[in-house]
Amino acid sequence: MSDHTSPQTRILVHGASGRMGQALLRLASERNDVVVVAAVQRSQPAQRVVDGVAHFAASELHGAPAFDVAIDFSLPQGFDPILALCEERGAALVSGTTGLEAPQLSALESASQRIPLLWAANFSLGVAILSELVERAAQALPGWDCDIVESHHVHKKDAPSGTALALGASAVLGGASPRYASLRAGDIVGEHLVQFTAPGERIELVHRATNRDIFARGALHAAAKLAGRAPGRYRLRDLLA
Ligand code: NAD
Image (cartoon, rainbow, N blue to C red; front, side):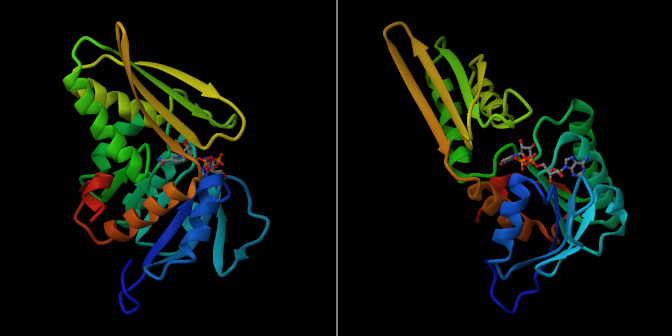
């Protein structure tokens, strides 16, 4: 966190009424290096101003005030408009929205030539480390079966989760061919089990998120670090220091 004399990074929260959006608004108000200047959700907000933050419907996105970084935790259908607005305004984008289609991923790649951009399937430090462990295990265990089992709350729309796919990409880098299984149950915040199995033995690497604040903290930290950087595609680990 920067000191009191540093200018605050102006944030637009996209997906503000959702589970992640609510966590972002609450945790941003506890920091002194960022200030939320706009909160955007799909439908008309019940109140225009809440705790000093201007709330907008997605249809009014272009009326949003000036901002340095948009933090997007919405749904794939909300992604294109917020990417376009960031490009139009020359603002940075931090997005954790999962389930993006291939054309959206290529639009993201091409926008990174014009704005600083970070998309991550998971904003927790624990998962960043798990990803490295998975790649190392896959390298060290040629020929072992690799299975990724992810569990989430019943409201989660995409499956396998973006995190499971990112862990799978790490396993592939290490030479494994992962298979996926998804469970949707109750209010599980997020669990990822990566299992390596051979005849007579098994290794299990597990990450359990018990509170979505870890993702919101990671995204706010990334936003504060991304503001004012050169255009490009950044990774969470580039911004952790
Ligand atoms: P949610 O359903 O609770 O909230 C979605 C929000 O998006 C709502 O505010 C809704 O109004 C808004 N929205 C939907 N369509 C929109 C549109 N067309 N334009 C603008 N806003 C729109 O979902 P959630 O649990 O908060 O998760 C949001 C996203 O973040 C999902 O894709 C989820 O998988 C992802 N997620 C990522 C991480 C991570 O670390 N990367 C962590 C948790 C969740």
